Image 1 (cartoon, rainbow, N blue to C red):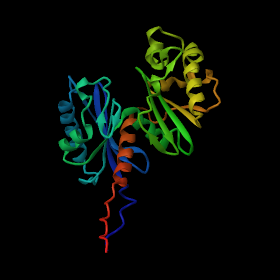
Image 2 (image 1 turned 90 degrees about the horizontal axis):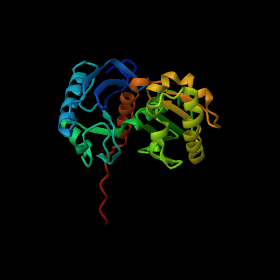
Image 3 (image 1 turned 120 degrees about the vertical axis):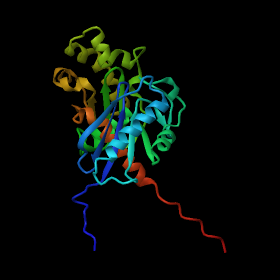
Image 4 (image 1 turned 180 degrees about the horizontal axis):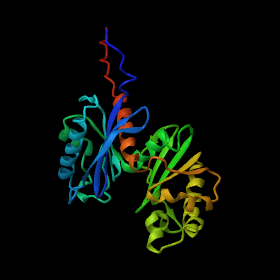
Length: 276
């Protein structure tokens, strides 16, 4: 009789986060939402064309496969990507080559690796990770994860389920695309003090989003979240708002988790019985 190794070897998945300057991957313990060992990073090729990025993805996954963490050919692989992804196809391209638009990214990466790959928007992946393992643990209803960076990324999670491609950074507020006024980059451009940034730009943005969706929780991510104590206390909202917890590994963890959920949903179709 074979021994039960489920406690010794928790279910694992591979997550890869593709950014404009770097591609980083890791093996994720799906029970804990943490990386097993160190993540592996390779600079994003320039130009970041589909073929060049796919080749580097292959190198990252090969490195992770070689680490002997009991991975097998069926280990889920999830990739998060700076684009709107619908049915595996990129509908936009941020900080990567515009030739990605219209590319079937799922099919491209699956062909490159010779195994099933699931691709997700990067903000969505980070949001899934925060809801499952980070600041959103135990919160039911609607959780909105807002990433403040060069632009504004967003993830819409309802009762633990991702509603993909929310793109709440592109809401029009006071005649402007929201991210042009409320992103971290918008603050940095004019060196606006954090308190003023919170009481004007962020207050207007979060109040509007709160009115539209009445969430149970806001989670704020991005590099600026490390300084959350300098601006979050100045926001006046009905909804609780917290800084993200997973930081730089959120994309990797979320992509791995979401790929596992996708693989679990793939079930064989029962053949129809013949009519007598």
